[in-house]
Length: 156
Length: 181
Image (cartoon, rainbow over all chains, first blue to last red; front, top):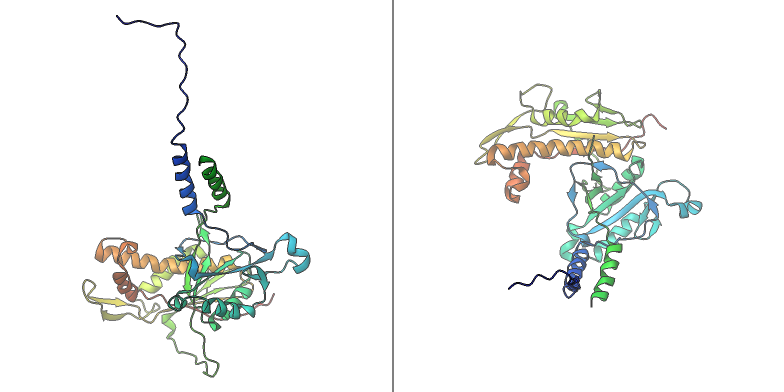
């Protein structure tokens, strides 16, 4: 006969945590694979312009960046508020772009050299004069594949 | 074990930046050798669409003030010249092979973008974006017409063939400083 236990206190069983490492590992691998480390510390501040016809930059190793914007607050005392160019980790003059590109390109594998893309990350309020100067320098250095970094536009 | 992976997990969580690098891809023209004389290439006036942006970010297309929102449609009309108008580029017949057959297209059209030194980068990019969008839409329409699928899903070879019908010809002049500051 079935016994009906009423007064027995039912305790909640302890949660089985043996699969916890697996779950954490799964999350870990997810974040590891989507992570892209910041390339450099920005010395200029910029907001990307917006556009719709965007293409993704495929291979990270083939992309070099040129940052254009006003110096961040900590550098403002030293460099003023005029628009400046940043290459790698330092402020640069536009005349240094050519050398920089040629150096970077010669460090690449020979088969990759023709595929180098230069991404111009410029503030949307930048005047075109400086962008045109950069483009001329890039042309002279034969870095003809360029990409204007932009974010997806949602409304017009 | 779980502790170590937790630690790593938190590290990657903190350092992750999800933003993808994307942008408007363009190709610059090759530099002119210094010893070469710059020749003014004669372009028939009807084959040329002049887009000017001034220092106040106003747009002038073929001598008329225009909003950037209308630029795409205007550019498409210009590139296509569907009605064989005399003021749009000359149509040339050429055999592109199956399935296109003989297509009339504006082979020699050029869109010339001129901007001022003081033009805002965003305005410049807007114009570039609209022009690229015009080409992309035309190519997409062509792909849908002949292959019944979007342009982006075609293989590279077929895309190249469509590109031949709608060759991207955006020329950029050196920025001029008209009007001053």
